[in-house]
Length: 206
Image 1 (spheres, one colour):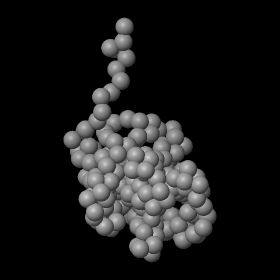
Image 2 (cartoon, helix red, strand yellow):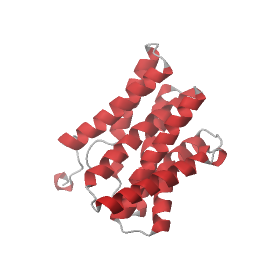
Image 3 (cartoon, helix red, strand yellow):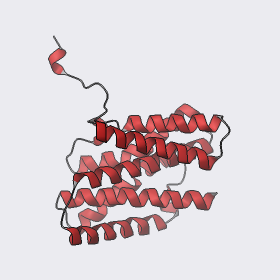
């Protein structure tokens, strides 16, 4: 079980590292900037989760996460140098996959350490969105979580489905797959059909 979860965590870190590398490419950063942005995007959410749960920070205990970050960043750089193009949808899709991975991992870890379902959903959401939020702030972009199509809401919906599956007696594997698929599907559907929450409009103010 722990080995399987570890590999899921590594995949989530690698996907978010790809997201950070794509953003660094978009902003014309140098090699150091690529590594920094890939790293903060990949480990930001999990670091916040572990601090809140008062646990050892995952990447301090296991250096394999940095190898995953460097490997993902290197492969992305090679691909970008070969393709010489940057469709924005690649960044958005990579971010959506990372969001779904970290949402279910944060939720599962919180439940494993005795958090209530409500707190677990909140921690899953924070784990999913925080790395991307740091990435966007560093790059002087309005964070995806604060604008546009459903983002954090996708995590909440996916987390609620995870909890529902858990109370129906499904296995941890099944709950994680359901939470991942629902989170990812909601985010991708929101991107395609432009689903979003009502937007604050100052014109409606007196």
